[in-house]
Image 1 (cartoon, rainbow over the protein chains, first blue to last red):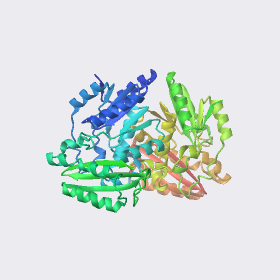
Image 2 (cartoon, helix red, strand yellow; image 1 turned 120 degrees about the vertical axis):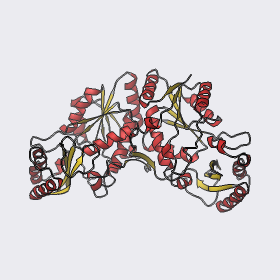
Image 3 (tube, chains in turn yellow, cyan; image 1 turned 180 degrees about the vertical axis):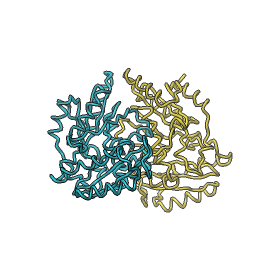
Image 4 (cartoon, chains in turn purple, brown; image 1 turned 30 degrees about the vertical axis):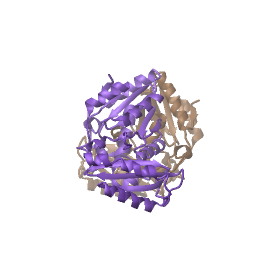
Length: 277
Length: 277
């Protein structure tokens, strides 16, 4: 069984003990509801670390007031089972009171990469993410941390945060894992209606055909995507063509330098996906 | 000789080596120009740690555009001598390029305790402080960090930051060390004119008599202090009577719960001091 650790002090103590025995420690930060995407991050962590910690914490400060914090799926018992099968050494599972024992007044804020894409449509989201990831880093003291490419903007922001704040942590970004029909895996997929679930793979179908097509204009792609989504009951939150390092918008696809990132609402569920070109 | 370490990676490596040998590591963050106040922090660090690191870095991001970054005294050779005499194990002395290799876009910001006092008169100052202290913590990975009571607001802000961000660091706040005439030690004292230096001790003379006097009203104290400073060519930046934990202003001194903090300009030099009542 993985050790289930609730307190920050106990988590730090566990890692310090491991480190004294020359073990490298890997962290996979999650909000639980573990799926194959998370499991692939755990397997990636094992390539670089001797001991793997999975943190499971649905962080309230990265949800906006009208977002799905309350509805976010929680499946702790199943999560433990999956961690057990993967050989995870510890699950760090603090309560909200453990993580926020007093009103938090210190925040970590990345101010450039977080401006566009999800940052524009979810004000305050990335401030919540960078702050909680800092807290998780300091609680779990990892040598290596693994994040998913599905959250491309988040991955870039955390990479910049690690550099800016001198964290002694190697960050690994692991590829997006997809369902049989290529829908990007997400805990939120569970919340889709049957019809939306059936049509949601068209998000990635659209992205996937871009490199093969000869459409290069951002505006044309945006129009085509909006039409396609509209036809399946989806509402485009954003379809952004950006320079892959700066995340600044570009008007045309530039080979080897482009990230196309999208967010689509299907009913109350907001799905994201992306492709590098 | 203390090891002089410039690079962040080398500093982290040194501390990890120490820690593997079960040594506890203490950090004394400074901007150099070491005086007896700093040396008392170093001696305090030795009470709690086996290895002591003194960081010397004049951090540009905590100075405002019209402040004294360029004039701030730098005495590196003498600093090394003093560290040598105190038995310091390592001096962490990064360049600005080591600490800010790319434009920093991630900031650590404490938003409540930093509003008043020096935060009000030096906009952006504490954001620079909390960000650089985070960077120094992550570079030097201390078990214990020692700060001076002279910077009372800074000490409270960093204490809150450590709590809010889960840093695994014990913070120690050491008493203010004073000159023979009770002027609080500061690297900036060197920049005073002879006449200002002669009169500057009156700042603390005023603070010191408050507990013995029967004046309790903030407003009266402010008026008396302004008159006294005016008479010696000082200009009061602030004279604040605040609740010692929240730093919120109070109208009268409350026994056991009051911090009186002041900042006074004498020519181009800004001096701070404080007293708990």
